[in-house]
Length: 110
Image (cartoon, rainbow, N blue to C red; front, side, top):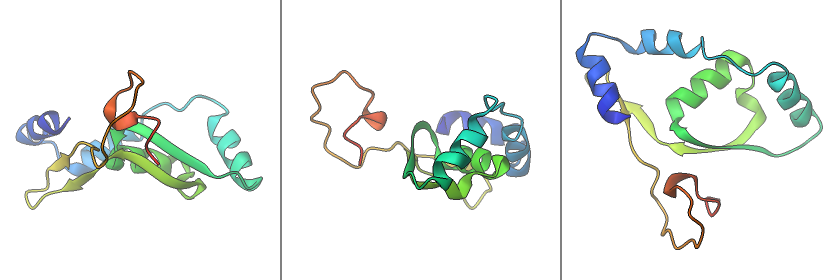
């Protein structure tokens, strides 16, 4: 994704444009009300995603549910000095899992 974001930036796309496109990502009907209800009932909601923090936070904010989650485990992202979205892998633990999981979405992520 980092390479793709470099290419998108090289083609003249800016962060605001990326943010606007992310707002078009469809959310399954009833998911947002279900999340809000679970949050209102006191459930500790967390996200484990193979996306990146910018994408996840943008979609959550647009959906009005960004405050419903206590933790987001995903690939870190930031905007560099050139205004380019940079995405890093989420590899900050020793992966000694016996399952055939993808490293950054391993069930051992806490």
